[in-house]
Amino acid sequence: MRRSSEPRVSVVIPAYNAQDFIAETLESALDQSFRSFEIIVVDDGSTDGTAAVVERYRDRGVILLKQTNFGLPASRNRALSVAQGEYVAPLDSDDLWESTYLERMTEFLDANPEVSIAFSDQLFFGNSKFSGRRYQEVYPPSPPITFAKLAGGSSNISLSATLRREVFTRIGLFDEEMTEGAEDFDLWLRALHAGCRIEPVPCVLAHYRRHVDSLSNSKPVEKAVLYALGKWRGEKSLTPPEREAVETTYLRIQAYLDVREAIGHTHTGDYALALAALRRACEYNPKWRYRVAQLGLAVWPGLTRVVLRGVN
Image 1 (cartoon, rainbow, N blue to C red):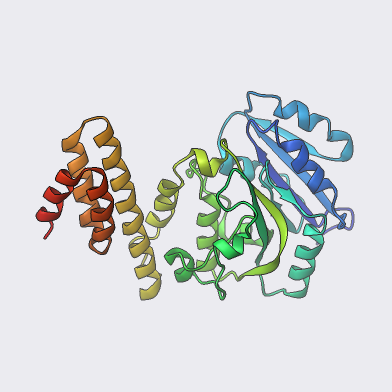
Image 2 (image 1 turned 90 degrees about the horizontal axis):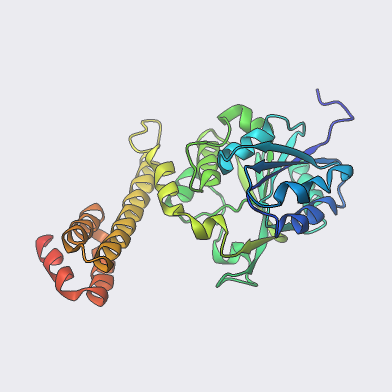
């Protein structure tokens, strides 16, 4: 049973070289109309002044944990190891919350005990082509959210989420092998497969910053998504629609990565390797062949014609 002195929500903030943004993030987290929360920041081996900035917030109750650079999933798990709240609210070190974020999210979960995870809408800002637009407009949640719809890309879930702590007890923590992003996507898939219900809260309560050093800009997220989906290939407990969604998306992303690899080899003059990568793209996903052709003919027409003749 939860003691009355314990916070209802644990705010989990992993931070790596975040000195330019984390003060603003912490201010938005501290300025909540809902007051029963704790804030746990994990400094993941930063080489800048991140820890010094967070230290200034210790007298306002912010907990700072330090570790060597183990990556984002491990940082979240470190925070979860000491978290006391019945709800967990992840927050990236450069994103912002509206002052009513925790109030609205806890109210929603309190009123809907059958929902395990709720996520709000958010606005893009910063260095993004979507700046000023809503996340759920660009990436629709399309409820009801199911494993097949999430794996197939027709449903989307943002990380401006609040989870019941029991979700982690049920399905485990973030996968620390996922060092390149998409650990949240992996967690949502596992939660849905375990029968957890995930619901969108259709109002803007957060702001999603994009900048040059953002994880989603600096690391190959597609490879991480591929890794997450790869764990489900051959999983016998999946239904036929779930299995088809996993396989279709996996092959589509693999084809995209192969085309990107082919372009890289072409720029370095490694045409044999480019040819092999482009051929793999066509073989992985025949339905994607026309996109391969369109891109390839624009970049290196002679090489592409050779490949397309070979897969006819």
